[in-house]
Image (tube, rainbow, N blue to C red; front, side):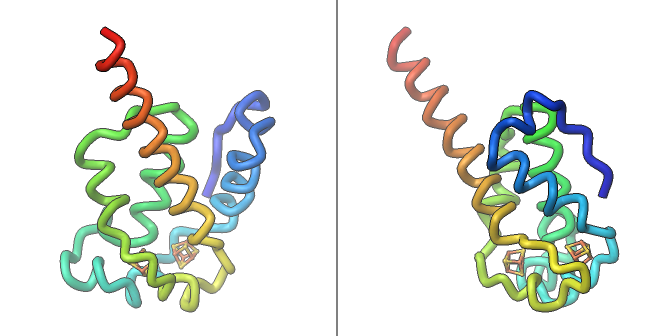
Amino acid sequence: MQTSFTDKQLQDKDNKTSETIIRKCVHCGMCNATCPTYQVNGEELEGPRGRIYLIKDMLENKKPATKEIAKHIDSCLSCYSCMTTCPSGVNYMHLIDHGRNYVNHLVFYFQNLLETH
Ligand code: SF4
Ligand code: SF4
């Protein structure tokens, strides 16, 4: 998957690791076949490939996590079944952890902002 992180963003070691991982993804969708949440919902954003795209978009564009995005990230069961079927060796575990940290950091930031105003 092509990425467009800036040099400044890549100075952050988590971004750098995520960028390297994201670039390994070839969009094949084989991971969706073994993802329980994708099997139940049949929605692209409820599978690993869709979540990788959401995480990439948030990180690259410093996007706030909307309720909808947070829902898709939260619903991942962290079973890592997707990692066993990925032919490109995408380290999904790092990406979902990074995505969750990003979402939680934003929630914490906005809570603080509300409390101080
Ligand atoms: S960790 Fe499990 S639930 Fe999450 S995307 Fe991978 S297969 Fe799906
Ligand atoms: S199986 Fe691997 S390479 Fe294929 S879409 Fe999923 S994460 Fe990307």
